[in-house]
Length: 414
Image (cartoon, rainbow, N blue to C red; front, side, top):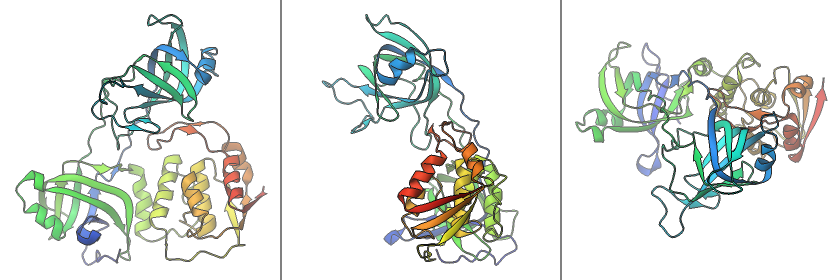
């Protein structure tokens, strides 16, 4: 976006709301704000394991093998997908849509431990299986229903598509779960632009709906998309204590996928300009290292041309104690302090195709590689309060394979 005039008053207006669905698909400024109360929130506590029972099971594959190791540390599965089998003689239940990979009402259990098995009353040769694990819940897409779908059975598959058999019923999966509280939003010290002024004049609540993406503004007036948005109804406005002509605008709902409260310091750093020193991310935990890379992605200068192939880049591996640390360090190795060069495997693969600062083939000198050898080892990623990834951990060998496939020569410098 063009630079924003946000500095012609005593209170700097750090945030810009933009309607990206305006006429001609143009970006329309909605409001400038000093703060957005509700953009940064304390993360929800990490999930706790739950207990489930698969009733009337015909186990197969890894699930059948895990039954032989119940009560041992080897009775573990990365995931179990439950795909309902609906009655083919009847229309699909409301809200159900069939896809190549399964029904839209399918559910997934993650990080599953087999606890027990016993003969099932549902039929000869069938077993009931007690499990401990986690139900994958993605609040931004949908919430698991309290009642099971109309199904004759559930097909069971692993996270990698392996057939694990089938079961007739379940307990513990479909039940009432408390939804996370809605975090209302207040636009603090707000200078409304024409679209918001028009909303504030409307009397009908249904006509005061606000949908806008949130952009951060730095000291130079440059605005970048934070990847967050608000979709809510304006419920009120009042004069702001932050300055004459400014208002506080209250909304009835929160930011989609708000940022962790501690990420405020990261965005505040970018408000004043690009980080000047490498390694400023090193003291952060995994979740905040991920947010560091997210901020670096938002501020990446796409207009800067890639360096030519054949260059040598130095990767400081002293703080690569997790996969998020690798992405932070690689971003700096390629693009300097605050640099970005991927923040997950798909993004890394995209960056290695060009347009993100470096052109393969190139050489990567990995200093202090012993740190990554010790930490980036096989295992399983369990979600924290802010990181919701599930699945096998990304290992050092995974990274080396991806880099090698992209013609990147990696030399370890211990």
